[in-house]
Length: 303
Image (cartoon, rainbow, N blue to C red; front, top):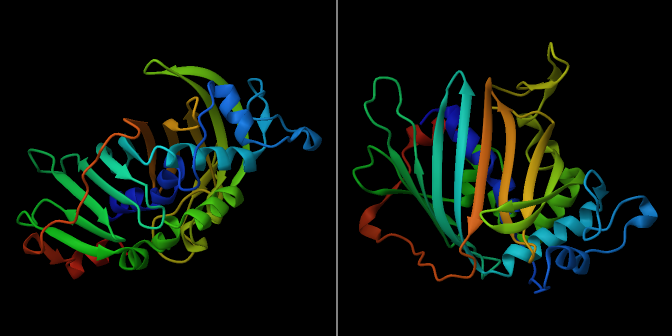
């Protein structure tokens, strides 16, 4: 797994956590519009539409929106997640991710996920990466690891990625980050996702409010759009603004999310879905006999 691919996965972490909800307890209204209206506060005085009554194309109050997203999925306690990350450019390929999460303890969230990696040059088949997050420790089993998991704390991962991942897992801190990072949120319209009625919203994300300033820099391209460049070193960088789509069901739970970003000469597209809310999941750390420290070579590859 190359430095840029590692960065593309790690840099997305706060946004994926945001999509999946991190705070509060949910309500159980009978309809999508009713759910959103119940969770929001009136924004008409500011020229913004209420969440539940917004018409297609109208901007909605971002604070009410963020609170609805966080309360909705957290109320389910558990969920299954599937996501595809498509990369085009210097390093093309697709990464498929499937897993489950347990957010019943907001201060100690758990996750188990498998990532199917594209084959590298000269390789005949792709490899899989298995990840388990328990007690703020990430365990990763990669091709070539002799069937064992590498172990890293969130603090150690933060040093690699330049992000404070412990804050990304903190419900209160993440909620505030989301509010700060969203420049605006627009209601797109109602859509069916796998037979479920949802309300589609498009947000504009200020990545400088989520990630360290050294990873974000934008300059006009020949088409007039922002392109990413590095200001401090050769670390992968992001544009300053990024579109972020999210679909909420009648209980404000995230059913689908999508985002696209430019990372070091590549275009990276994320498409994800959540389902199986509230169903039992089993997530635990691997046995000590199957765990080994993260090699220095891999740490430096992502730093």
